[in-house]
Amino acid sequence: CMLLLGGCGKTLRNTAWVMDLSKEPAAWHELKPRELPVMPSRSGHTAIAYNTLLCIFGGHDGQDLGDLWLMDPGLRSTQDPSQSAYTMQQILTVQVDSQELPRCYHVCGVWDDTLYVWMGVGAASRDDMLALSLK
Image (tube, rainbow, N blue to C red; front, side):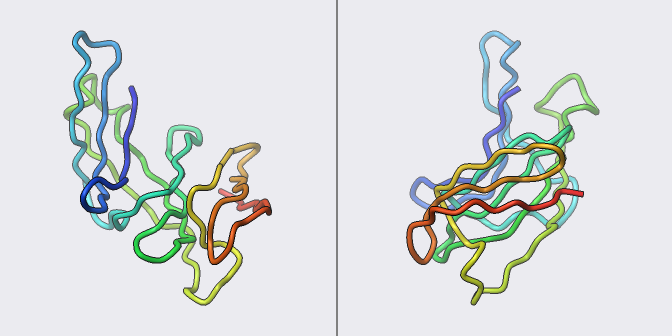
């Protein structure tokens, strides 16, 4: 399956979409939240697999964001991805006046239960790397 989360067209979005690549023809289906909260709308964020979850970090919603969300897409509970429902949990909130974390258009990787965030754009261009524990 391929997941698409948030982004922007004419407006910012926080919707989640799944495409089952084993089906012919492949088609997008919107995933609905099983419960609240859901991540606020944003673009310029990263989403990366961590075990059976997705880590979503940062982005932009009119201001640079430095929050971290874990998403369980709910895809393991059904054979039909279009019938899945997801849950989300915010595990890191950053104060608006913090200059360290908020950024968009960055790169992320996961290694050994740690999310690494590299570069990006915040109040200025970033050339640093952050290490955030996922445990």
